[in-house]
Length: 300
Image 1 (cartoon, rainbow, N blue to C red):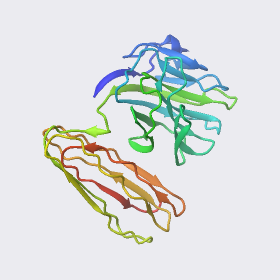
Image 2: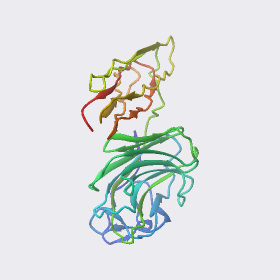
Image 3: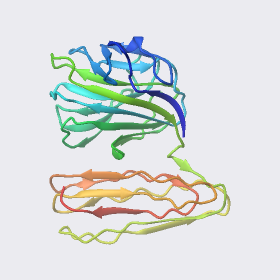
Image 4: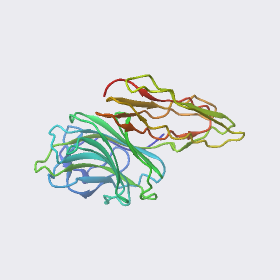
């Protein structure tokens, strides 16, 4: 992981974000609206109450795999505010690409793809207290996380060559200063689509499920081997329906090897009524991967 940009929003006097310089990564450009850095508070706040309030780093963050993270809090909740992260913007002043935000109107996390109007959502209440939002973005895969837990993902490929990123404090409530942003960071990271160890290996996956009211059964076992270094992509996990509210959790731990495997990403899904939850596809890799998925861990 390589640091590209970092901003703690430190200023001695309150100024517009476009007049502020990040600790690492240069300045900021407004796409629309107004965000201010607040003197002595180490936060940036929305000032325009009738705008998306989108700002991007003026400097490109590159077209490779990146993680963009920011602390976001909403001390004054309203249905018409939507804080979040924007990635794969075509220019520093653009509002296109992908956005991962919280939608207070519908009480859900939302990852949207502006190019083809594709949206992934995850219903969950948020009380507005500080959360760390993160977006992983690479060509063909964008994932939204909150406090390290995956909430939404898209596999579309909008603006693949676009290299600008930032955040938004969207506010159409009629009252400003409802949201606070802190600790913005962009890092160059490894791809999640293909992880290779550089040596012949065997890879396997077992899907196991705990018994519950819905009568879950043990899942299938899948295995594949290579005789030369190659990327292996395990198949998608199955969809499971049980007849009670439940929460579904998936983890993809990877065993360290000479190729330097990294840990996988957790996933949680929940329903308030009987429904099917589809976990995301696991990443590919060459090496030994032991993965347990689809585990009933109690009522949602």
